[in-house]
Length: 90
Image 1: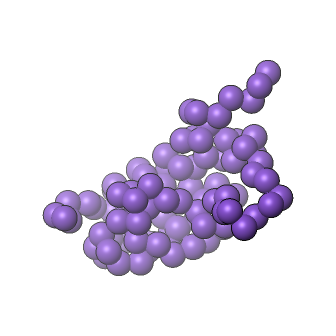
Image 2: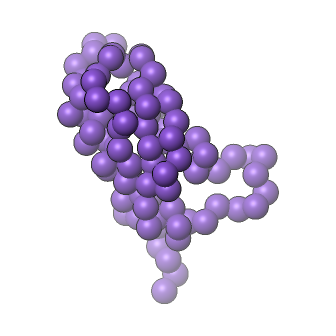
């Protein structure tokens, strides 16, 4: 995989998810960078995992072990990508 990303790409990706990239420099597609989601959870992940793999905040992400359910309305209010697909039912 050719590494053609720049810091501006990380900023654009994070913005598209309602968050920010906390790191001020790009260190490579496989390097860990610090991110913050729209609900203020900070986490480290590589651009490869997030941008190419389709993941985002590990705290917000639903898991099979979490039986409390996922608040789609709350997630859609802070994550523009989810808001594009979520239908509130109203």
